[in-house]
Amino acid sequence: MLNRLVQWARRRSPWVLHYNSGGCNGCDIEILDLLTPRYDVERLGILKEASPRHADILLCTGPVTRQSRDRLRRIYEQMPAPKWVVAVGTCATSGGVFRGSYNMLGGIDQVIPVDLYIPGCPPRPEVIIEGLARLLATIDVPEDKPPRDAAEPPAEQLKSVAADEGEASDDGD
Amino acid sequence: MLSDILYVLIRLLVLPGFTFLLACALLFQWIDRRTIARLQARVGPPWYQPLADLVKLLTKESILPAEADLPICTALPLVSLAAVLTAAVYVPVGGHTTYSFEGDLIVVLFLLSLPALFYFLAGWVSVGVYSVVGGSRSLLQYFSYEVPFLMALSAPAILTGSWSISRIVGQQATATWTVFVQPLGFLLALVGLIGKLKRVPFDIPKAKSEVVGGPLTEFSGRKLALWHLTVDIQTVVGVFLLVNMFLGGSDLGPLSSLPLAGLMDALGFGLKALVMLLTLSVTSVLYARLRIDQLADLGWRVLAPLGMLQLAVTMLIGAV
Image (tube, rainbow over all chains, first blue to last red; front, side, top):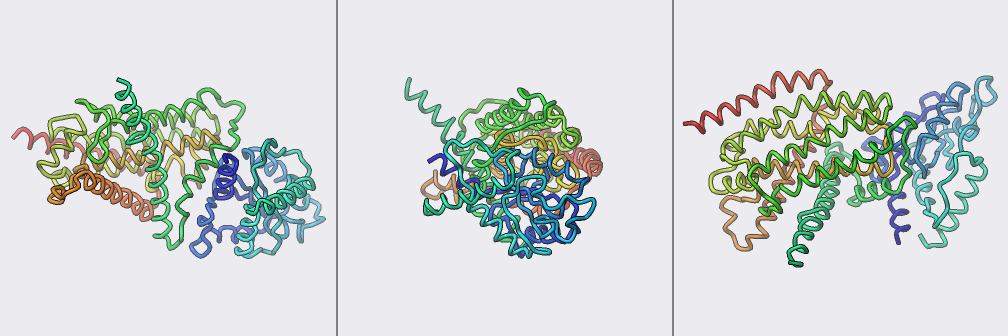
């Protein structure tokens, strides 16, 4: 009962933090579009927060440069659990056109675990909203599982999201 | 004896105590956010949004920087919430007062100003750069709005000759609403309330684009939820206080003599509170944030002299 209330609250109140770890600003502008009257993600309870401590979802854009790697990791570690990471745009997903460059590490998942990839250069705001809505639908409150560990490798993360999704559909949600 | 205790408990915990205030706080927050969204041609959040936010924050991990003072950081939001809830006990709602005595206005004003100090302390002990900057801004802001706010709320008390809120409300039912006698005082109190609640023209201490989250930058989870709840309940108490002091409480003029007096009281009070809340929402859409020096300027060069003028006029009228 209480778990269901918490799950309901988490699915309906995702506060996002936006961080660009070295992209071209294209995806950032599409993310800001979400707040405009045309898309208005406050309908879904999404608020853009300025402090990592207040946020639930980290919206990452751009490939990770060597210089921003530590900042990205620190921002992720500052967020209180439970937390989710969304890679927005082709660069954040795989490194994009910057892949293989001497000062790039590649996509966001080279540094922190990613829960959702939204490709596109830049992705349209509708796609970002769709992606966020799908991510929210997978949010589950397990009975006695501890919060996700930051040190968990990305592959594990993806599997656990897929598993959560299966459980959610079993519940009939 | 037992029924007396039960009666007091119900008054404190259910109506018009904690449960009622919590419901009002969530409702006011939703009305506020929805109004702002509609005025910006957006749809806005659904009605359950404030509840979802509260539950989510309450069940999140609560972390603080290693250098932060954990016991004080835990105590501060609790104490501020307690201060605001205690203030609510002395503010009449719809003509009913839980407790009332001569001088409760001063107690309420004191209790309502406590969260501002704790807010500053929260910034100071949580050691983040933005927290400390936000904290010092909030203290500077406190000194700018609090003096005109106090002067504006003293004027009705001097007019009535009583420092009890329920007496001031009663006086307005027989004479006329204070807002018609002291429109200037009402405006000052409104501006002071906006400053107290750190709403948009005066959201200097927590301006996202300048100081991230202000004093609350490093707060998360349960502590942040309690801080948000403090502000929401402070909004409710502040709006109720202004309705009581300036808008005649639940008095509806000639309509008050209609049947179902209790219902009319609740309706009148709710309607006035709604008008006050919408005024706050519209104000925050209309105006852009001031700089801290502009606010100090406004507070000391415009609002404080006007407050003194209001007090002087009230005293002169009282003397004649």
